[in-house]
Amino acid sequence: MNAKPVFEVEKIDVFYGTSQILFGVSLSVNQGQTVALLGRNGAGKSTTLKAIAGLIAPRAGRVRVLGIEMQNRRPHTIARAGIGYVPEDRQIFPEHTVEDNLLLGAKKGRNGEDYWNLKRVYSMFPLLEPLKQRMGGQLSGGEQQMLTIARTLMGNPSGLLLDEPSEGLGPLIVQRIGELLRTLRDMGITVLLAEQNMHFCLGIATEAAVIDKGQIVYRDTIAALRTNTEVKRRYLAL
Image (cartoon, rainbow, N blue to C red; front, side, top):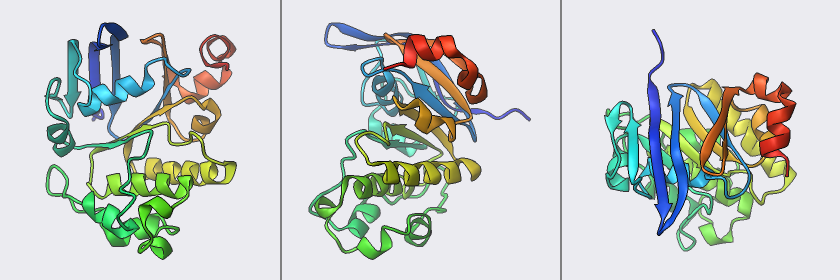
């Protein structure tokens, strides 16, 4: 049986005010896939994730979550339908403890799933347990990134949208986040990962889509992208 799409956008146009950012973007991520959405800064990666999460309403096109039409729905409705969104700026609660941050994100999944709880999250994120009584604002950038991913998992999502998880972090914490995402991939968690850092994604994603000037210009396996010098030179070289 073929895997079903968890996220789908079909020919979406997205504007900020009068400026058009996405032009007919179509993209799908099937159950169990980890897909990297790659592109330079300003290419439309974050906007695509925000459109799926309901933070921006497309002016045209369709957004589906597990086959259900979601365009123009409120973000909390889309979250309850199974989407977990990890924003680029983390948005932890700085005056709450690590454990309170996790509990604020806790809910059962769309079908009552309760797989992700404090015990499992501390097992998956061992650096967080010793910090559970520390205020979120006292964490390092890498610790905050781990916390926001863990908090999102506490909502038992059907799929994750991760926006630039490696941005601004040191090499060691980037390596740890990469190891975490590989573990989630091997567990069959569905992930759409927006990144500028192609090398970070090569050992994590199963497929790649490249976005440039608000349009998808390439989609193939990570192995194919690895050997496609022209696509890397034209769209991904800094």
